[in-house]
Every structure is written in C-alpha cells, then in structure tokens.
Length: 279
Image 1 (cartoon, rainbow, N blue to C red):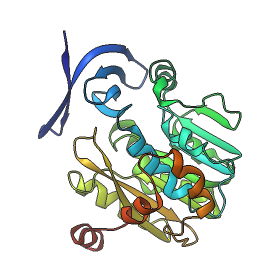
Image 2 (cartoon, rainbow, N blue to C red):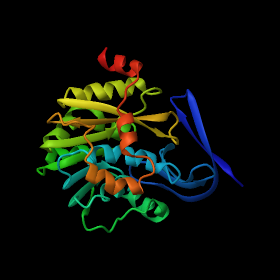
Image 3 (tube, rainbow, N blue to C red):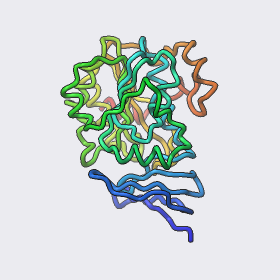
Image 4 (cartoon, rainbow, N blue to C red):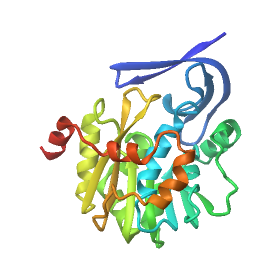
C-alpha cells in the first residue's frame, strides 16, 4: 500500500510525497537515513525526516551549486567539497577535464554507502581517480587543512544541530584561508523567502569574511519553499558573471538546468532581498 512521507517545517508548514516503495531505512551515528520511491520525484533521499534530494530534481540544485563557480574561477585544478554525501555535487565538478583533484569531506560514511547502492540513477563516478573521499567533520577538517584549493563548495544541510558550525564566521574564515588568492567559494545559503532570516544572516556573515559575496538563486522543487539561495564569494573580487566560454560549451550540452542565460539571470536580486541585505 502506498504511504506518505512528510516533512514539517518549524511546526508551520508540512510538505509530503506519496511513497510507493521503500529502498533503505537506517540510522547512522549522526542521523536517520531514508531512501524511497515517490510518484512525483522518483527515488528520494531524506535525512532526519527532511527531504534532501531526488532523482527527479537533483540536477536543479547540483548544477546551480557547482557551475557558477566552476565556469568562472580562474583555475579549477583543485576543488574541495564539504558535504554532498549523495554525490551529485562531485559528479558535476568531475565533468570538467581541467579538474585534476577533488577532495570531498563528508561527515557520514553511511549516507555515502546508502546513496552508492540505492541512488545509482545519480550516475556518480565514485571510482574516478581524481576523487578523494574523506569521512570527517568539515569544520574539523578545515581547521587542520594545509592544502590550498582553487574552488571550495559547501553542500551542507540546514544550519541546525551538527551542521550549525558550517554557517558561522570561523568556518567561513577557514574556507577563505584554504583558498588560493584568486579562488572561488560557493555554498547553499537557505531559502530567500521562507527562510529569509537565515538567508540574510548567512549572506551577511559571509560578507564579514570575504571581500566580495554575490547571492544567486534557483529552483529546487523538493524543498518546501521551492526557491533556493546560493552564494558566490571570492578573495580577489572576481566577476561571477564572467563565464568562460570554453567551459560553458563543454558542460552546457549535458546540463538540464544551468546555462549561460540561466547563470546571468540567477544573480538578479529582487528589491526586497536587496533591501534585506542592506538593512
């Protein structure tokens, strides 16, 4: 019999999907992990009863997190990904032949193993020799990190519980310190409308650390708010709209969400968001 999987947001909003089959249910040291089949989005991942991603819409999130940074950064040879246990982020990074090494730091090994087995539709090249997996807390990793990266991407959960440290100044300062002088940082920064207090606080926190921070936006239908926020930050003041055509021509044919037109449009702020970020 079909059932419903429901997410409740702050006791104010409930979003549910009709489930037709269960593929995985487990509890790691850190969280509950559910992977199930839905009529609307296909195979879907939830952590601690919060929708994370699905086969039906994951590309909209992962392409918008990755390609604005990877298509514009002066160099993309070495990339650091914090989080991203489902693998969609590293899949998009590895589309670029210029990338020579990707370090993915994920807290929960059990999430990665579950996604490898039950989210194969994501087509993540887990065996790519350029990919290094590190199972460790991202904050702790960066505190001890001596490497320098061209791009840092943070694909983290909501800023609650163990993930709260991923949205605070010390963590962002560590990200900045591990970037090369002309490096680029990008992260998801919550929903600009439904979670506007979190969104505004996170962007302002980033602006207290990086010389230039530009928020941008894209749709993520499986999230209760629909519209999602990202941030692009640099040490050098690099132009986030300066897409390198040779890279765009390489990845556009395989993208379903990101394109040069979408890229330019994504950085447009509404008057309300602009005022909130100034006030």
